[in-house]
Image 1: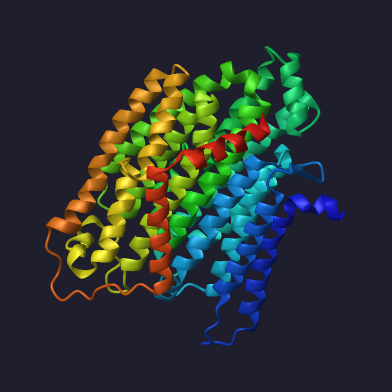
Image 2: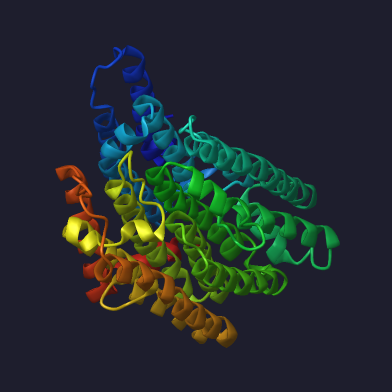
Length: 478
């Protein structure tokens, strides 16, 4: 039994931390200040240590979970997202009057589901993990119960998420009906044997699975929930779900389609090609028209999902490695950008619209400078890691002969630069309101921002070691 638990120890650490946060909240007296977030940091530190110890061992648990290097890499990314989110969260929690115990517990339970999804090798376990983190994120989206937009966003997210889950579950059911199992190894063996070739039910199963995954990665036309949910959720929650959900979903997406369903590439690649093109174009073009920063970053997130789909479609060694590299870079960049949005806001001035950032350079030069770095990385400017991540994705597409995807990707990246630089222009070249109180971020939040910026510049200048690590990690599932 002890050996069987080894592969899920990181998930157990995060789950226990979530339970500890719930208990701390239950015993906390009204008005008492309790460092509940510290319990989450301890659990995430334990999970990170377990991941390092499991690296390279390919540990299997209960026959449906395999802690291979691919899954462990994604789990490390998720642990990093969790740590940064907690470090950024104290001030936004107080400002938005969020229940701290509920917030940290839901955050950790969501991470536990995502981490399980990254290492699951059975479609049913992937579905269960997806539901665990989805339910937690639905609730986190609506934590500002006194704000109508938050409730509306959570409700839309919940309804559309329920539909997508039904599609995904039907895809699993069709797969089981055809193969007699939901385990990815057996699905892969049945598909590779060619006994299902030409079976129309197999195409139905493929289509339903694509719908389920496309919803979670905000691919067009399954993106409708994204702008409303991102705008309605507390800003720090938006940063968390825009990065962690995408990392977990793409991990499972890659494991299912690049491993188990790889022989059917001729059937699913054209569908994903269309989704990638539409996702990159809509995310970039519609993002230009936004005046709300949260909605603009929501469409930016949609566009970045399209770039990740390009790497998935390429399917070569560079493409597979670039998925993991891009997920890490995007997580640090986008979470940092949303953290700055949360830190510069006050109850009197939420700073969620473009004009709210006029003259930020005068009132808070540090936060303005940090936000500039994150925006430049999102736009793909050197020497930030965003440039390297996009370069590897487009190189993978060209190597695979997907020239049209690479061309559309480059053009949409150029379009997206406009709305990123528009914010920079407002911060540095416009006068802010007189008498505005400068933001006062905590030392913890400033330290987390400094770490994020350092990571982006380090990976922008010296990405080779991480790319090699990502390539070795991806090789463990093929």
